[in-house]
Picture 1: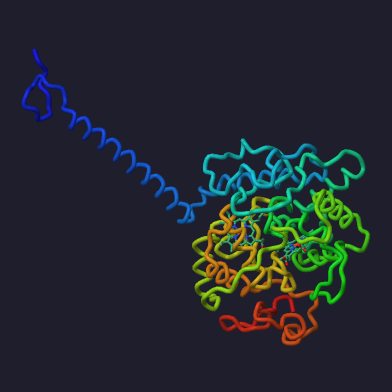
Picture 2 (picture 1 turned 135 degrees about the horizontal axis):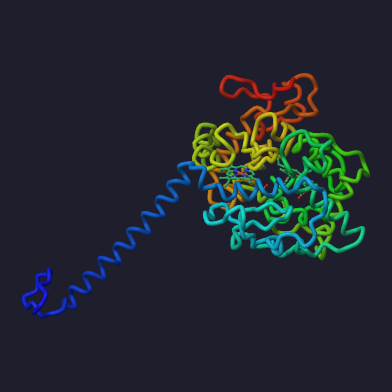
Length: 383
Ligand code: HEC
Ligand code: HEC
């Protein structure tokens, strides 16, 4: 006997027609597509919807690496991640990574650089190529100070930042003021100090302003170690030649005047997830997993990042983490304006008067210091 089939064919004996097979195939295909689209939408929806679970892998990785970093002991044969500057495995958005799979190394996980976007002519030596011996020990010490500044140079740091927070990928990443792009540029005249500064003096500047701390005295081991690290990273680099990828790429003026309100919307949508709605970043115990962008634990008013054009350039090239160059120029200018319109530690060059300090050191449209924003004159905290 024949089994009664459900499909509406004329002959009960016939198998489904070709057309029908095709139709079923099409339905399956459409189903798969729909599911894929839905899953993607849900994933990105959650991400943009600030669901913390989506950044948990990055968070866990960073927390774990910070926790294992207190030991000043050098980490030989470091993370395989550092073998090449453009192939870091942990990406900001990788939902599959787990804390357990993180290589235990002192090098923090970082988002993969947008490999194709950065054309550099120079590649620094791999992290596991640091030589043995006393010179190697000093280089490793410098690396550890660079990565975990608060732990390894505590007396000179006055906030919760580390050098690597603004010089990504252990100072390797092109377009985030990499060490290999900096070392061979000094001595150099700097308008900020109005003098010809050595590399070591340039380092002292980042301690005073970006790290809101104290400049280590000339010849201090912290400076020697950092200089040794930068020197080693510049191996094979031409001296006194500005390399592509050095510094932060200058950002062209945006079409519209940068705007606080628009910037706050960009911030909420694309930055708050990691840096917090209040801009204070995120901590895990002792470890600062995501760095603060303003407030008492951030860079002070004298820092380069406090200048809107520098912040916009850094942000455009490097943020959101792992998604560099995804913001429009306008968004980068707007969000930089928003961030640098918040209160932060006093400029160490403070003269006793905000107005006077502005006139002396911040007389530029790129600084909001001493200006009124939302009814409050900035630059008054800690005064
Ligand atoms: C808050 C962000 C921030 C932090 C933290 C920070 N820096 Fe910087 N650093 C900058 C900015 C901004 C510049 C200027 C880049 C430019 O003008 O292209 C800079 C410049 C430099 C330069 C010169 C780069 C060049 O191309 O001339 C060196 C070297 C440097 N920093 C080292 C350090 C060290 C070492 C630390 C930690 C002790 C540190 N920085 C911490 C933001 C930061
Ligand atoms: C996925 C998490 C994540 C997102 C999203 C993100 N950041 Fe960051 N950001 C970081 C991390 C982590 C660092 C430090 C990098 C390091 O240590 O390797 C950082 C560093 C920074 C810094 C320099 C350090 C400091 O504290 O001043 C600035 C400025 C910054 N981010 C701005 C932004 C802006 C603006 C956005 C949104 C357009 C954004 N970030 C989105 C994770 C993120």
